[in-house]
Amino acid sequence: MPTNQSHADRPADLSARVFDSVLQMLPSEANPTPLVKLHALVPPGSTLYAKLEWMNPFGSVKDRAAWEMMRDLEQREQLGPSKPGRGIVEPTSGNTGLSLAALASLRGYPMRAVVPSKVPDEKKALLRLAGAEVDVTTDALCPLPGSEDGAIGLARTYARAQGDKYVMPNQYENQANAKAHERTTGPEIWRQTGGRVTHVFCALGTVGTATGLARFLRAKNPGVKIIAVQPSPGHDVPGLRNVSELSVSKLFDPSLITEILEIPHELAYTQAAALFRREGLRAGPSSGLIFEGARRIAERDGVDMGVMIFCDDVFKYMSSMRKHLPELGEFNQEGQ
Image (cartoon, rainbow, N blue to C red):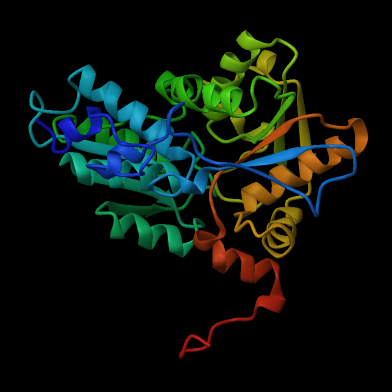
């Protein structure tokens, strides 16, 4: 039996914030990630809340999908006692791989992450720190289908050629990815806003977040607007995709999306800095991009009760932040 199995299923004392295992900290309707209201940067007459996904135990929104996919593999006996020694291989731009690596270590599974070379060095180091073997490939910043030498192709090769050693969750096609947000993120937002949510702003990557929360919230109120914010083509925002890059995802359902808003990718970094400086939120670049999209919709239409999915925080992206914000400076050998 995987380690921590009983701890994961045992109720935690949420009122006292006491947990038998880090697995009990994974988000749910009863244990949601926080919503924080913005003030300084919001156009007058609108209300915007940030949902702080970096408060998940492994630091990003991808904890949700990683846990759902791993539990699904265990329930289908693709991982666990019936497959001794078998682990996970996954192509990733960082966050899903990090969540899977941390969970795999806790459950006693080996993990191999296949990442594009352009992924920030901080993420590669964190993957190794979490216990994953890391293969670095020449690929787009977010893995794309095609070459067998790319991240997706290489991960599939491992899973196909060494099926006794690896199973590939495949976040780009696995419906458990979207189910995680239908089961947790959507219900959390509905409960936290008392059903008053009018807009949800999110990014496009695997599209599991947008698809899952839209399914839940639209079932509750068909009038909820789901706004997807995408970076301009040629971007360097890890984890995000422009619609032109979405052929990799089998989870994208355009009928669930009210509007797709394209934002110049440079604003991901400048607005991330503004969120920290003006709102005290240590938001990563994807959150900066999502905020800029929400701000524009608020200026154009007004937003009664908007929720922005802030995917992770800025710490994993400092090398990219320094590239876009020269005033942050470069570190010398003494780290000053």
